[in-house]
Image (tube, rainbow, N blue to C red; front, top):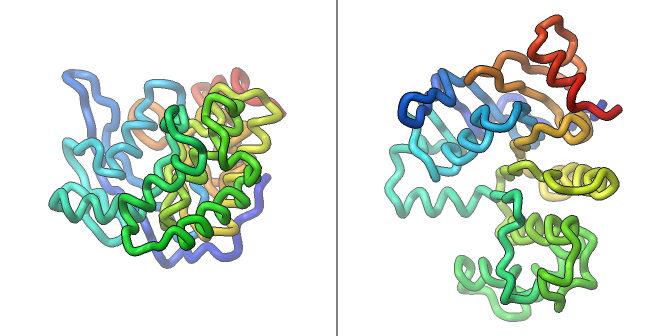
Length: 257
């Protein structure tokens, strides 16, 4: 089990959610969710596909609006922000997509440089080169700077996607199924990278996954989303220390020790 990061400040919430509800037509996805994320914490949200995990982080980042509830991110109530204020908040949130979301026509360096050119216009080329070198070194791919995404493996593309997310020094990281589609060895490498990002960049992170190996490796705290609500939360072992057949079935089907 991953030990609690001693630098977690449990007195400072960076995300606070209360009574969050979201439905699509007649299908209720989130049925009154409460959630806190603390500074420096890796929080894993577990659940089967289609249970609303990705909907949750899209609401946190303002990509979807809630039907009901309160969502506060870094002191800002997300659904009350103007478009300009929401754009400013999103610069403090790093979103790591399942498919890495790299531009196929750009080199690795150009992919990393793009958000700097767009959002940090005062930087010199020397500054940009230095920042790119730092994040590439952090994800262990300094040698890939001039490669095209098509020349990279799935795990390498995932790493470059995380590097591009880190380039603007976000306070919060949102990982959407970070190990999806990866082989077990590469998944272990990505899990280690998530922990290294937390340690090195002091990020607060929500990791959306149904991969229990990932959850056990990276989670300071784990919450399980069942039937539109968080039914279990605690350490990995605490979440699965239950007679709830829904939780036991999830463990028995998915977990690789």
